[in-house]
Image (cartoon, rainbow, N blue to C red; front, side, top):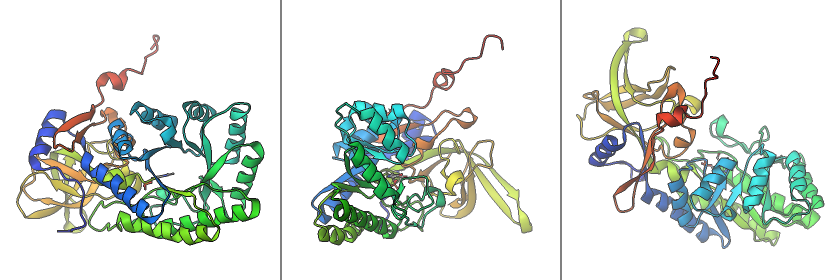
Length: 431
Ligand SMILES: Cc1ncc(COP(=O)(O)O)c(C=O)c1O
């Protein structure tokens, strides 16, 4: 047994009860695991540096109950759209505990964030600087600003979730002087820049790329102080650790991750006599391992493939619409049968029920006596699953159940109803 494996798993009885009450596919989240991860980050950051802020990247899971849990543990909320800001506010979180990202914010989104009083807007490009200057002219808002910087660092993760390198749509490049120009322009226009931000990538299993990103930011902050006496009061180093999807993912500990990143920045900041707040905004590592998805097994089919071999497809009652990550990133997962089965395993491909190849989990081991009606639980589906769910093939998005600290459970998201599916559409009268 892997002792470092602290992923949430449902016991068989509870899995069956939840599936029978709320239908499958079903997302299930564990409150205790979410609280544990937030506390681990808070402790690790506090142990590494006196002034820190933990935010939760709500794009990973913006279920209102999740936002309420992380906020109750003292985390602020990172939002990347008006919708995510509205979610936080609906969860009872003051906008002043939220900061807003976005590489292409619309003016009305910026205005909405300002009127609501978000703590920070993270500015991504020169056009946005000019838009903000116009919006705040002659008015007083509590919101401050961070500049999103691209350190030019190349993280080793999937290309579609790498964001800190030079060739990116995000932020101001440090190396080509854009970052410095952006700060000076803000200063000239009276936009209160409180600090800087970067995010080098996601699903990082060690701290290497993030350390380099943190160093770039600290050096840039020190330079801006020396050259222009512009002071970064806040440096946010972006997202958190990767998670364990399969046994081959072995992320370093949250403690080591935080300690190492802060240690890479501190000497530079000390030398420049600066003590900004150091912020981090993990998403995946807070909620990912706290979630499982339950599916019911349907058709099981063995087909001939090349060289006289065969493949067994196990079809489940979900797929692309509740978990598009395998199709997007070739993401791998751990799939387990709920309840005892024979110890003899076969290698199968778990497919969804969509009109695409829709191979969800390729070459996974499952017991040979698996049959129609059995339940499967897929681990580490708490992050970027429900938030990426869609209605492809007109499937309702699944419900979410929350297993409470007491061991009881609550339904925190209902399954889409047919009225919700069709309620916003009209057929013009002449059709
Ligand atoms: C700006 C920003 N911050 C934080 C995150 C969260 O990253 P993770 O879920 O890997 O912790 C992301 C993810 O894409 C991001 O773009």
